[in-house]
Length: 590
Image (cartoon, rainbow, N blue to C red; front, side, top):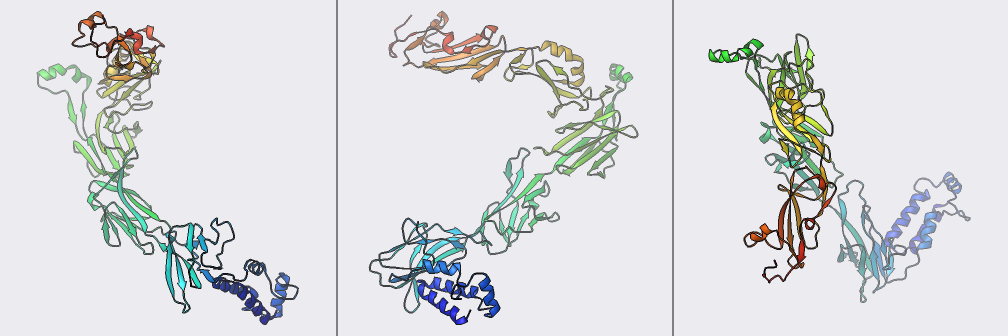
């Protein structure tokens, strides 16, 4: 194909296109696809022929050119409109309000009085999503190629520009403009509680490129690089760094700073969150009271003669390690303190075989036998609200098994708890005989427990005692606190004539509830004075009418018996109503 033929055909299309932008684009397409820039040789000609890119006359053609030729009619309007291209903004232009015809993105000719419409604008910057649509400028270009802005449109989609009826210009250019929005950077230092809630920590200092901030939201230029540093030196004595988001950081513990190593450049909002955690402290009482059976028998004599049969012995702990590092303490102190413990730190304590460790605020595993008649406790520091733990050494339970076994109960559950409120489970090491425990007995649904030390509100037996008392008195505790089916009733407080409330003590009852036989059940019934009813009062209530009672209110107590089983209780079922008198009539109706 001859170069002159290609250039002639390109020139012909150039004249057909009504927009300078489309002329440029067509010429570019043709030139890029013609092969002229590379080679016009016969080989190039044969390649185009094989691709069906030559027509019957041997001239170049393609689907792109055919489409452009078919869709671009000769210019008809007096005002030429060109649309500048922005590769980072996708939008379409139309000359009909419904915007359902072919868009005129390649340019068009219009007349005064015509209107141009624009579609919704989509941002499409693959390198930075912070590039957003800002505005569309309509510029007028004069014969000297000078331009001036005659309209700025920010509200899209919809009307772009209406050509005035008396418009004298001949060339308009529409320019879509975008801008980079500031990146939002959120800075937070928090303590995450064991239940997952967060508390903001205010004493730390954030630094971005040398400027200091607190816990706040900062706007930054998205095109600039920056470095984020958090200084937690104000917390270093009582708190430690436990993690962050993002996780790419450098923890320089010597000066208590966290430096974030990377900046996610493709995010509109970046949150930097540092998590600090309070250090834990563990105090261990390193001593135990030994008492042999003879001394126990002679307790009274020892007291009389001033001799103490109980000897306070020190140096009980044989080994103490934190994270496999032996504590520097030589264990001669009566009280050992471990400070700056972190959640998850591993503690190992070794004591003689006949002794055990008890803990306040910490659940210990059962000890394991070791050589030389010793026992070891290996456990991790938990994440608790209070990071203060107290341990002490005491005599081991004399039970040869030394392990707690859950006692099954019919229609209920028995449980024991240590001084810290932690429950003993199957396999737990038994408390020592002198150790204080809390015993609870809880019935299953629709059953009640009877006897002393029963909380009427939660229907649970609860008592504190030494473990030795629990072992010796268990059967009598169970016998004195039987579990029997409760009285199941449904409380209906809906009443057309007034307000009905049932109580057991200070607890208001609603719906289906379980009551204990013999329990007192109180109800308050207050009538609406305009409902047309009065309560028939008892003789006692009538005597006290002036000072206490009213014909529109009743407060009475019912004894819970088996007769109430399965019933629906309403206030009006336990009072007698009669037709009322006028509200302002105080005549004695009795």
